[in-house]
Length: 316
Image (tube, rainbow, N blue to C red; front, side, top):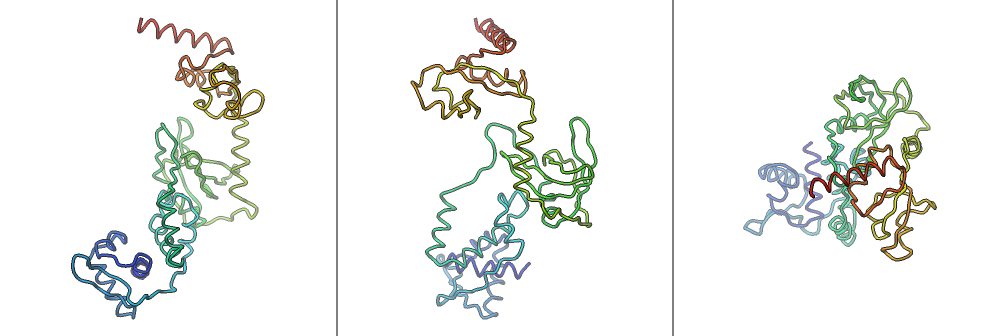
């Protein structure tokens, strides 16, 4: 642990220049006294670290010293490509890996890499909905990394079932995490927020040699979407309101956004929108008020009329 921290301290000074003990302590999550001891240990090992006193003091490498000790550990290399590393329990490893990559870059590329981090940010959560609670995500990620079997309890509807799983991969889809795993009944996909408990076992498993996570997810999600119940609703709305509808398909096969490019913004357009069921369509379409008119099916149109009459009676 200390060896890794000493390397991180050295690389921080190499990439950042002069830093105070307080800044180093914050970045490495240790005390300032620990930073002082680490700096002394590096000096004794032959690394030319200068300790500068005074308000503007701190530590720096003397004489343009640079180290070539930038090799990544296997965990750090994996963390660089793991997406939201902090959620997977890899935040510290990810930070160390990024630091090593920065140290290996020439100064002009270091500045560009750090500038990109300041200008671009990835937020994978969806809007206007409760965030999935995933306390077992780090344990699941550890099992995936290590290739270890899982014993888990999982909510299926109103009941909780026990499962023994071979975890093959994790997928982040629209702010929700899913575990792709194999069990006695075959390949399955589990929503991570529905795990009640997870225990990573010591026994491993044989990963299918031809399994590719991206390919599996693409095929499974396409099949899942096509297999969902479909309740078609025909609507009329102003062209200007189309961008506010969720991404759905125009009757002629074009996307709504494409259909909105032609004609006056206030022209009325008709489109068919697929929902899972009548109740879902009713709740979603009510939020659009008079901007959207239900044309078909009759039972949904009548339900919308009753809702409008009740609102008028309430405020009338």
